[in-house]
Length: 379
Image (spheres, one colour):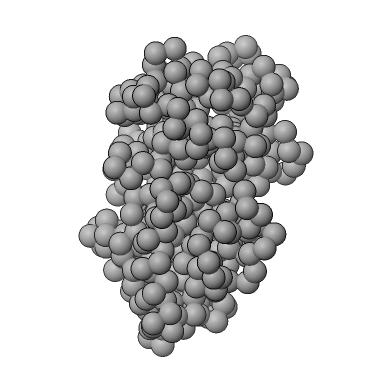
């Protein structure tokens, strides 16, 4: 069993869920609020995890996490947290449940609208201590289990980024056993989310050689193992490596992210369309790579091709488009129901998104229009 502290303590292996009792004891949690969603409850994963709780631990449960977590859902969960005298959080699920769990810890200990604590409003430097959180991922993509960042849709309908070391889970329990039943489409979409994290983080201008190296390693794992996990959901080696790649993606994006995520956040803020974040990243990644290629050191593309096992001079964006098709993912945004009349509002959202500012070249409104047009399949 590998133990990694970068900087979250992480247990990763089949059967890692058995350490939950020790994790709670280590962090002084006796009355946790479990944040999850109804899908996790219905599949039986919730019962599996709950069965690992010590007899002296009394949990409360919030199981209504939306596919894209909202401030309203956070407030509902916080009310349970406070009424039941909870002293910590256990987040079980994909990125939505883990992001909601972090937001609960924030709002249970900090007053005011959640947007007051967003990254663009300087929240990173103002967010103080929060209740401890144990993260248990059930997908392999977001990497939220090892990061202090989260994304929430505000009551005004904006999708905002929050980030603070004080919101980082105290421990990540990464048990690939919990991902063996993941459906093909979710395996593909979450896996491409991990790829987007690794590539975007690697391409940012921030200087962080350890994070860059981790991003390349995660990229290699996704290219090697995602299709295997997609083809055979019971492939234990592939599931282990995809769970590692997901966490590595989040470790890497301590360097920042970029326009893939600013565009994805804008699209994901629409609560009626309910577009999946990982699928959006998969579709947008080739478009943004083509835009960024002129603004990223060519040596980075050389190293990415090497990690991906591609020939010298291969077009990475075209390769990803073809790879998406082998995973039965949409070819463009139009296939996901996005229309050109939405673009002006999407651009405005992008211009204030935290990830916009760390793209290798900060896009203008006109450049976003060009990227949205390309990603719609009408470029």
